[in-house]
Amino acid sequence: MTGRIRRGSLDVVLEPGETALEGLLRGGAEVPSSCRAGACQACMLRAVSGDPGSVAQQGLSPALREQGWFLPCMSRPTGELVIEEGPPPAIGAAIVDVAEIGRAIVRVRLEPDEELSYRPGQYVQLIQGEHVRAYSLASSPADGRTLELHVRVHSLGRMSRWLAAAAPGARVGLRGPAGSCFYTEGRPDQPLLLVGTGAGLAPLRAIVRDARRRGHTGPIALVHGACDPTGFYLVDELKSMADETGNFRYVRCAMSGEPSDGVEIGDLTAVTLRLFPCLKGWRIFLCGSPDRVNALKKQCFLRGAGLKDISADAFLTARMPPPPLRRGPAPPGG
Amino acid sequence: MTSLYDELGGAVAIDAAVDIFYRKVMADELLAPFFDDVDMERQAAKQKAFLTMVTGGPAHYTGRDMRRAHAHLVAEGIDDTHFDAVVGHLAGTLKELGVSDDKIARVGALAESVRNDVLGRTPAV
Ligand SMILES: Cc1cc2nc3c(=O)[nH]c(=O)nc-3n(C[C@H](O)[C@H](O)[C@H](O)COP(=O)(O)OP(=O)(O)OC[C@H]3O[C@@H](n4cnc5c(N)ncnc54)[C@H](O)[C@@H]3O)c2cc1C
Ligand code: FES
Image 1: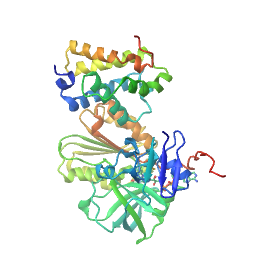
Image 2: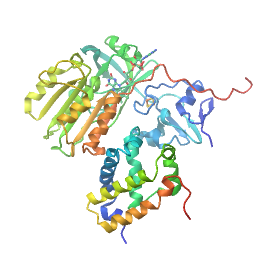
Image 3: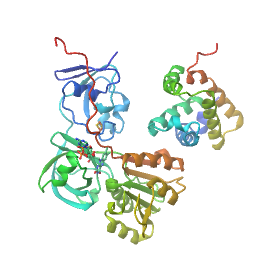
């Protein structure tokens, strides 16, 4: 049987290979989306009957899965899927301030209307108008209720440019938290390697601080990658963390430029593997550019890290312009 | 008779075996191209199902599933050399985990039984 989607008055028969999201959009529904790859959860909807498929529920918490929430961009139903109208529940939040902390990177601080329970390094979805985007949390609940995000300002980005220009007091919606990029207790002496590019530093900084707050005793290494040395930020904070114990190593890696103290020049994956050639028994966190994250994930695994010990958040963005929709069957009578 | 799956220590041990096995497969130049673009978690889940089956654990894989799962690889040109390489890595993995040679041979025979399904050939009856 071919897939069929019903939502309110909408009734769409899916084309072969079409996702539920594509079908909904083709039928004229307004469903937000960004990555269209199951990574950001911007498109999440709730199925009230029918099976969206297990791939479409990957990465969702057991509670959400049980209630029928799923990611339409990853769903290719083979039967009828009835979808609830209306978006997932969200809370409100107010922008506290926006500050430029690096080249094309702003720190956004947010005050949620209700306290958010999360683990440092997880991500949330921000909702602004029709746009929903995932951002990782650089803060920790231990620092108070205020949330901190690091947002790279994309030259044509709709959400990131809005955030960069937002005035204190501006309102956004907030959902989450989600994701498994966070420190877990139980192996305090396990060596940790955290590698990120650009704003991928946000969750990694949060994880390092969390690990130390929770009494981690093993070595911690943080590698931050950028195109050139002007791309690094939070340098003083991270350097000062390195001073405290000697157990924390902070390395910057630029693709081009002059090497200097603490700055390596070269390909991020190659430099990381040169500095950390054997990763057996290590816990790995990777965040930022999808290409870098995927390459590192594979190489860290080949160098001995267990698959379950590697947590990765690829910061997938929307493909612009969006891929064209298929042409469905001609509407009846048309 | 307890299965090798239980002897190895069930699901937890299979997770460790999957890591070793998958790493060997990915490091193999003959096989790596077929594993380059795939989602690592999803791939590991498949390998786990495969290892569970060939060690006599609670398998949910059927010959038909095997056929369907590998159809696109057959189209891309996998053949007996690839299958042999995978079985070789399977044996190597079990050896690393301290499994005796006669048991490895038993696992090899189970793996052999799905060769035609994996390679999309009509079974030799
Ligand atoms: C799990 C996860 C965590 C994330 N965490 C972070 C984080 O902590 N920090 C962070 O900065 N980002 C993060 N991201 C990425 C973030 O979700 C957004 O995708 C990103 O901010 C871009 O959103 P945008 O609305 O600004 O760009 P969009 O408007 O969605 O555009 C996407 C891209 O297309 C380009 N573009 C837009 N319009 C056009 C056009 N007409 N022609 C050509 N190109 C165009 C934009 O410049 C941009 O590069 C994360 C993503 C995921 C999946
Ligand atoms: S998860 Fe569906 S659009 Fe990102």
